[in-house]
Amino acid sequence: MNRVIAASQDSLAKKNLKILEAPRRRRLCAVARDDGRVALLVLVLAFGVLVMIGLAVDGGGKMRALKRADSIAMEAARAAGQSIQLQLAVPGGEKIVDPAAAIAAGESYLAAAGADGEVAPSADGQSVTVTVTITYQTQMLSLIGIGELPVAGQSTAQLLTG
Image 1 (cartoon, rainbow, N blue to C red):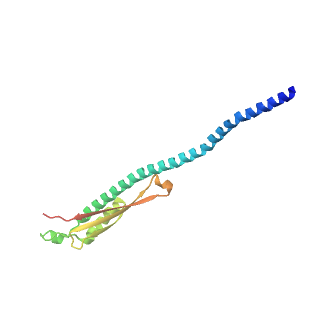
Image 2: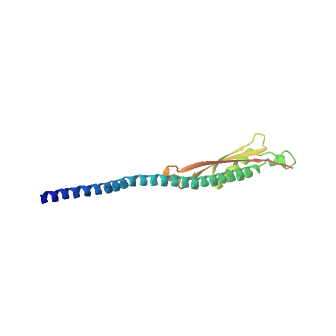
Image 3: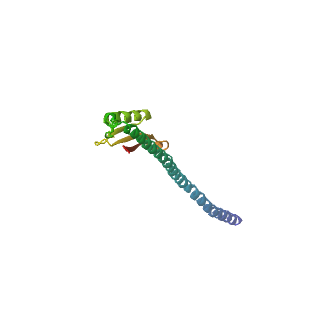
């Protein structure tokens, strides 16, 4: 009889032990299942932060490239606008742009600046418009496949007399 009581106490102790151990296991499993979700969240957020940094860095770079394109266009238009028809201007006649000389002067400035562009004197000979196209090489956005950003600048030089 004592054996039966001892055996039933042992089985009862084992059941109690299992009951006590079961919640602990469930808690450990629940923690292990959340680990992957946190890592995925951190990965997505880190990627988003890198994209935002890339937009800030390369957005600023594109703005600098736009300023450079505008500056080159202004200087090329100024150089082209100085090419007037001297045979009319020197004796006191009308001051108009010499189209061939203006295009040559503007393109010469563009070549020296290392930029591509177009020089277009107006039909009335009173202005020269220069359009410049340059390419900004991205720093951070190249990591996601955007390696270049095209930038264009335009300026017009108007002849003034007086």
